Amino acid sequence: MKRSNSSRLFSIAKKVMPGGVNSPVRAFNAVGGDPIFIQKAKGACITDVDGNDFIDYVGSWGPLIAGHAHPNIVSAITRQAQLGTSYGATTELEIELAEKVVQAVPSLDVVRMVNSGTEAVMSALRLARGITGRDKIVKFEGCYHGHGDSLLVKAGSGLLSLGTPDCPGIVSSLAEKTLNLPYNNIEKVRELFDAQGKDIAALIVEPIAGNMGVILPQPGFLKALREVTQKAGALLIFDEVITGFRVSLGGAQKIYGVTPDITCMGKIIGGGLPVGAYGGSRAVMDHISPVGSVYQAGTLSGNPLAMAAGNEMIDLLSQTGVYESLEQKSEKLCEGLKNNVASLGISAQFTRVGSMFSMFFTDQKIADYDSVKTCDTNFFSKYFNGLLEEGVYIAPSQFEAGFMSTVHTDEEISLTIEASRKALAAALG
Ligand code: HOZ
Image (cartoon, rainbow, N blue to C red; front, side):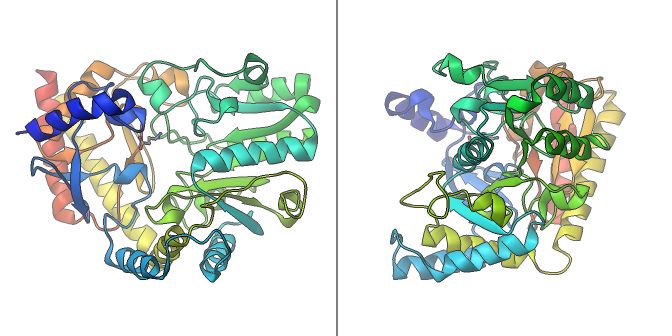
């Protein structure tokens, strides 16, 4: 497969952008080789600048649950662009999207739109600290909540992929306020809260971890987090930036029946445009300025293009049968992948909730950061590059999720399974 145009662009990009990219995982450092540069995308297919087509399971890292350039979303953005791209003032589109989000997500009465998941989480932490008057935050190893200073401690996603679990440049007095625990370990949570509960403002968790690959919460884990935080007077924050509108219209909280105090969202609710949001009960959100005194603002917050795209996206997902269809497609793909590894005698673990899934190259049961770190990342690199050669694009890291869209066809899924078999066989050598 010719990739000389991508390589040429990458060498130019490195001169003017750090590592040639605007977000680290895109540089392919974890898998070797030059990243592909994208020219266009439609449906489940992306095309690079050398004219190669790939069946895409990255979906812009989650937002594109309806595929690339969905006609309804493109029309909504185009229509709105002709009316203006940003006003820095309130629009009816924002009310529409807020109403849809509040109606779908069980814990929300009120929602504030921001511009990214990172911003949503940073704002949620400030809100929790503002409400409680406490400083400490509890998070889990391998969970990733964006690049806010308080959270780059043993974080997942790019930090895990690049083997840099902690980040220089974080004020030590702030890093000390972040307490890290192993995911799925409720005993450790109880111990910590018994010792320091009165100083803890919030516990933040991805209710389904999606940034060290997909890891499901063990039965009772989220409910126990709810009980422990409530008892300590700390807030429970669900980071549903990935899972919101992905695993169900009401996110992971709907599936597991646990109600957090604050929910952070992003990705899907912007229909592929930059967006984030955080929300909760009216009592919690009334602490936010201008009602309350916890300040948070943004020139492009509630941007009309993003609101138009988000409204259209939620309408698409609200149609009957969407999540059932996503479930069937994802099951078909993952069953095919499982058969491949079984027939080739490869040790792998599979995790999936609805349309988010992972295949981990390890013989260890996957439950937390330590278990995912047992994966054979060299084998993953070979597999990734083999898949690319076969015309399938997955995230360039063992520690990221795969995403199915509503527009992946049966034929594309079958082609993917066959491509995966070939890539696995080639990786075995
Ligand atoms: N942190 C994102 C994945 N979990 C990567 C975003 C990007 O590189 O675009």
